[in-house]
Length: 239
Image (cartoon, rainbow, N blue to C red; front, side, top):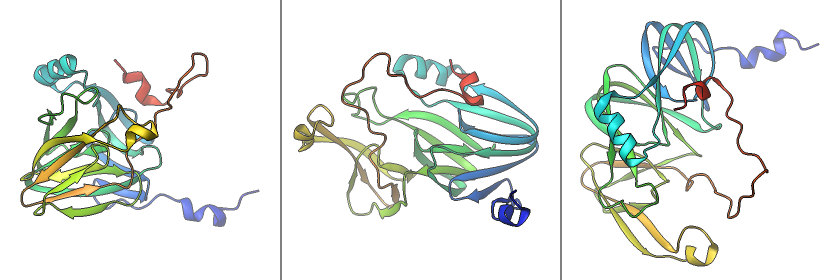
């Protein structure tokens, strides 16, 4: 029999505002008859009266998504209770905006408070990348939760900085971005099409880099081997 003493280490963390880290890989969100926006499918548990709705983001953003094939999908959680969010055991960081702007890689956005407006932007010059390159631009005042595959590093972009598109988590509003390409050693390692793309960051500000180049895609896939099982409440909101 498992004693309560053994389970003590896993007890819920007392909320400190709307966003509280339950642990390094799980975010606890306290809702008090209000709402937050979160990445679709990131809910792992909730307590209380919480309702979920797929967020298209309005006609303009829905049209942009339909035309570009953009895959950033959000849901709105509304009500009163505690909501627990996570993504693939990634490290979660809570950043705070104070009437400012920040851009987040669409794959690394987890949740943000209602005082923050959002839009989906395409990085200029990224049309040659498969599916383009899209990010979530956040602006306003409030907290933003982002994820990192490993412990990230913060780089000062006052010096011209270049990063793998899947490694750049987020960057400050005053930083300009562009896409740079070259022939890479990846030609011989089987990753990509032989042309390597980096995002160039310039201007006073910062960029947060994760020690990962995103999920590894198998070189060959065979029918009948199965895939990632959807599951979870998030799958109910898929288009």
